[in-house]
Length: 116
Length: 112
Image (cartoon, rainbow over all chains, first blue to last red; front, side):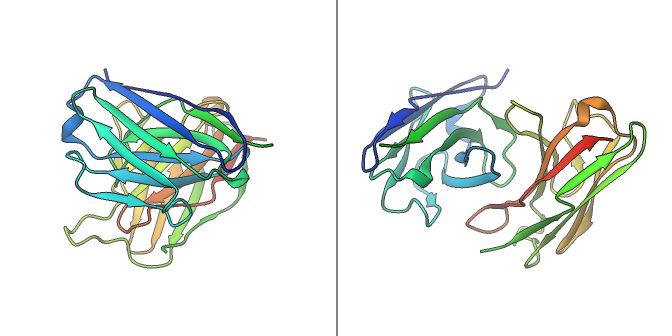
């Protein structure tokens, strides 16, 4: 069965960096777009970034452009999100999801807290 | 950006009664391939979102048939024919037609 497991979240000071990972199994990873979506505490869902199966097409929300970098390693069936220059407003539960236009499978999320 | 507007924000429902959630987009969601990428997600308390409906009206496997999606263009609806206790949670619509992808603000379904 399809599984997505995020890791790498934690507490970081404003201006700091974190790298999130999403390990996947149960499907041919390289066949699918992958997406990061976040949810601030008590708030709604917010799309962050997506990457095509081969990694050639990448999209970012304006709020993270220039600070976050999405990448993938198809040999390791893994998705990544490098987050730099973190701000308080980046505090959220970060989910990875399979596909982009209709995200079918989601992980359980990893919590990122940006606070001094 | 395409704005997705959901109503109501909160929906108290009696068990066994129907419920309906509206989602309106600021522009037509018909994509160049002819598909309309309007999805519905359910998020139960403490859980990850779960896709219920994709491309307006296609129900995912394992989703009870009391859930149905309809609509076209800019106006969409999620209906629950008879609400059960396990349906409590927040429901989101999401458009996947345009970048950036955008979600509605959510509708909280609770039992009266």
